[in-house]
Length: 477
Image (cartoon, rainbow, N blue to C red; front, top):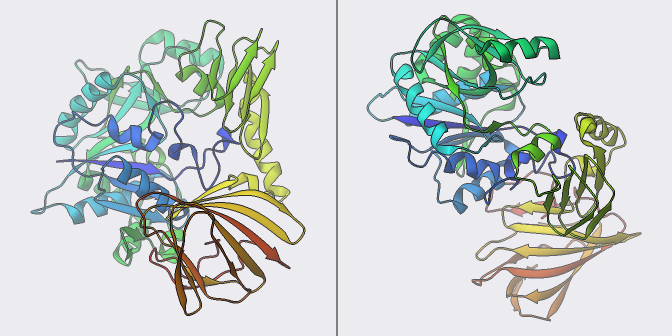
């Protein structure tokens, strides 16, 4: 039995402004038709004995993750919610415990650990490597996948293989990110691979090694999982117990110390899409070396990545640059400086800017809202409520709301009144009134909401009922 463990907890700040804390790169469609999370699961189609995945994600992303799984008809064995990030070793430990709990007849499943934000262009080659690793994992070995390098790369750690023959080699050592000269030597030797961060092993084999080499981490994960709470389709890890867990990667906690580590060479067009320049390389370019996404017009521009989400982006005479446009931000940088995008994000955080965490369009379990305009004492939003979805029963202390139905049918609750609104009809929600919107129809409901009042912050909300279990959370709608 093969259980995919999908690690979906990153924030992807190097791909700002497209990737943000509450809508990170693994939940975006950057290369294929699906999101990176969806593509990660899709490439397992055709691999033998694959069971439902265990997904580990930030609790703030839970509804987006669940919705994206639903869109591809994937049912997770468990969706584990991390209250705080503790790196990959604890994430895999709780996933292993969840997989063992879900297994039948006391089986010890083989886990295939996959970050949700990788690109793999040659799916068949990837699947072949998985089958090769499966055999080694069955025998109790801890498998890592080493990417066959196509150039000297200073941004990745390396794995040196030991002596052997066939498809699987013993791991001789893990090596930190080298300088350029050393990376050139590694590639020329043919014995070094990029460390992909993908693994395969039996759940008990990993937990046994973790217990031996990082007993405090093992104990903290075991305790956190033992007292985890089920919330709808999610498993909530407790904040206190999980935060007490030491933070470390699988490499440092286990793989560099165990004697059971083996490596399977992987030559499948892999990329971790760790920067805009890496994304540029992962997508086929035009005759001028440009990758253009969205409404883009380029003239005499070469070697650029140009991405528009909401309006025309036009360039003249640009060379080796990245231009990213979203509804609320534009980022321009030379391709050789894209690693410094994280410095922009850090500066925005210091200034308290929302653009580090939220897009203008914010997704909720019931749909989304887009902040169209705002000014002193007013704010205008466009709400999209999915068919059959409902917002929480709530009230606001400081603002009133006017709703106009653009399309669809809305069922409105305002205090003790419940009524329907059709297209072009409107209603008014006074300050302090309990209210709710739900969509009883079969098409999306579009509403223009005009807020007015002394305070329009997202934390001015009191929830009385919520079908999504969000009582007590400070977020709009």
